[in-house]
Length: 366
Image (cartoon, rainbow, N blue to C red; front, side, top):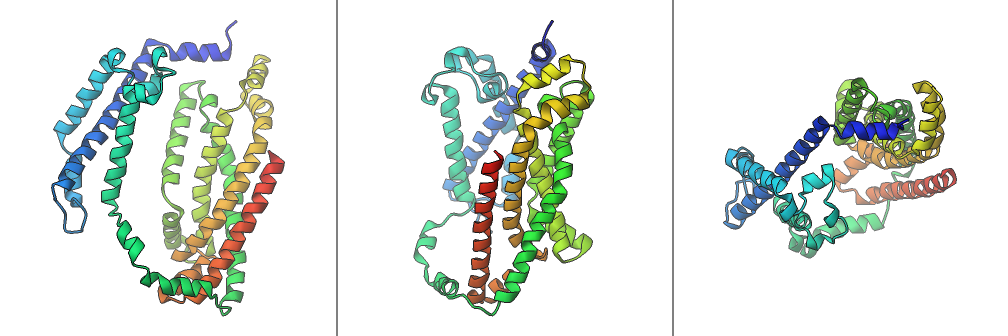
């Protein structure tokens, strides 16, 4: 009698599955090669002195033109194909290693003795230098022009009591804004986490498609910052803390679903297989084999998310989402640094206290 794990491995080793993994590795290698070629061309143009009118090394139109070069895509695809075909003398490619694993003789080699390691090092270096140029990093300006920062530091070191009462009231609103967003996110994230867990969605094509859909939607949702969600909901429900709650709620659902599902994927499969062998239904397997293993870490992740939401809620107020950020932004614009100092101290003390409390609670839970 074969176990569930053996059946899954047998399904993964079918010719069709092997072909899909081979194609995935080739596509990943092609993307990585294309990134390297694009960054090399970008740096070559940059050091040749080409600059756009915005101060960037290239105009946005020229950057988009780089992505449209068919010959560059072709070269990347050819290089990736050759590496995948001759992986034994050349070494395992990054895409093949990610999807199918490395060759046994490379498993314990240091990165300096593999072509994959040197390629990764080159990619990191090119990414760093490209990012340095695109973001226009100017360390000399940062280290020499201290005069503009003197007034800011002086005001922060001499906080004003004029805004203390209003700051305390809105600070309470900030804490509850984060609390309500987290509380609303828990039920939906809990339900979605089972659909977004790979080890629970291998049974049939419906489950696999549900997994892909849930992961895709949550990744896209999490990719949009709460500040952007706040702007969307402000146009929907108006300025105020409710828009902030909705913005943090949407982002919290996506973040907690990811954390919850990854915890489900790391559970011990022994109890699940034992309960499945008794003929239990899917809900019974989840109830008695999965849920008891995930409740403590779920509580820990939830408290941690509340801690994060408290910090985020201070920024949500900058665009009208309620909380202490709602009065902090105008004072920054007006240069009232004494009042800004008071509000910053209130935020810092609250975040510090929340961090200590949440850490203690997580220690007790885990």
